[in-house]
Length: 227
Image (cartoon, rainbow, N blue to C red; front, side, top):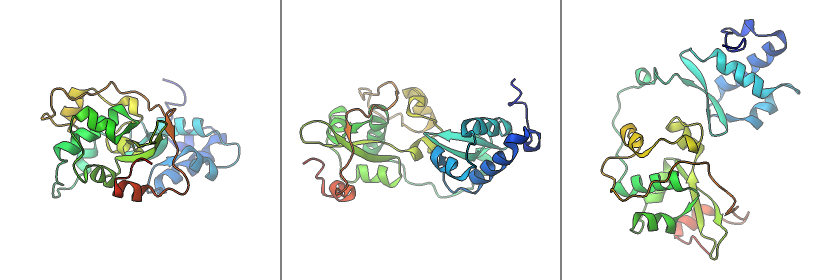
């Protein structure tokens, strides 16, 4: 084990890091959502080595009830995974995703970035009304731009909140199909011929950013996904 990983108290950290670590810890503790590197750097003293500070803090919290977790490109303090069930209160179970929404989410997660037409082609059926709305209301899916092909259709991908909700650091950490079913992300009723690709990092080379004058909500609501 490294010297840094063996430190269990901020007071034991080297003096040059101690104050910066306390600031970083306070920022993460007070935040009501995960913070990216730019947000953290902006609040730390000039010259602070953010990567080293994050690694030191992560080591400190490694065996605690709260862990420093990275999801996507953002950092947050979260209840340790093995303790999470103890923190949950009994509550009314939310309605399950429909079969269409479950299949659509899985296709977007594993094939992103992907257009609506491509999702329909993989599923073999057209979208039912509201399918994407449900996934976007859950903040699991979002439009990320337009595909660089004739018609410029809107292209979709998963969000950082999707990663956070399912405890993933990045898209390539998505488990295999059977593991997804076991975890509850996918249901066993999925059709046997549903195409689930191997998880990989999202390639944005074919994605054109939205124009500043485009209202994405209006485009999606109207179904006008291409020009």
